[in-house]
Amino acid sequence: MKAVAKEERRVAYPLVLIFALIAAGIVTSGYFYYQNYEQQFRTEVERQLSAIAELKAGELEQYRKERLGDATTFFKNAAFSGLVRRFLDHPEDAETQEQLRAWLDKYQTYYQYDRVFLLDAQGVERMSTPSPRRRSPPLFHGGLPKSCGLGRLPSRISTGTSITSEFI
Image 1 (cartoon, rainbow, N blue to C red):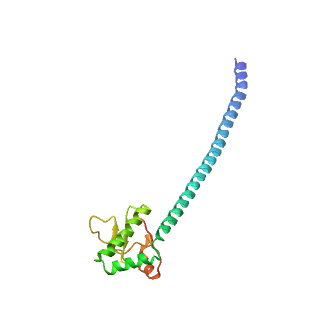
Image 2 (image 1 turned 45 degrees about the horizontal axis):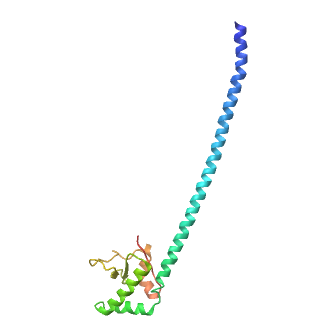
Image 3 (image 1 turned 90 degrees about the vertical axis):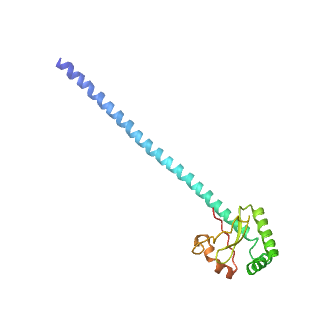
């Protein structure tokens, strides 16, 4: 009986060793497969995020160009500038108000803005289209926000540069 048990152990050791080697091979190949999959997945996600970032940057650049293009309608426009100056100097002048509102209405319609408004140098809304239902207080309490570029409004007025801003 001892000889049979010894013989069974002698046959079992190589089988256990073969099983252990196969199991170790499977675990090792699984590990390398996972590492390769993770690297490929990460590369693909990075590529997709990079493509999205490039598209967004392009969209923002195009959006900015469009807004600057829209602003050229008013930039260094002598007729519009004179009209605004007359309106700011004499806000009660109905004919000037009507002409200025016509400019703003056409601008809003043509460029498909929800609202177009005219601010004075302090950031107080002087006219808008469509007209607000009630007189609104100054849009910017404590001064104009620096983030929108309107904080430099008085200096921009004196240097003759245009400002466009859109609040979402």
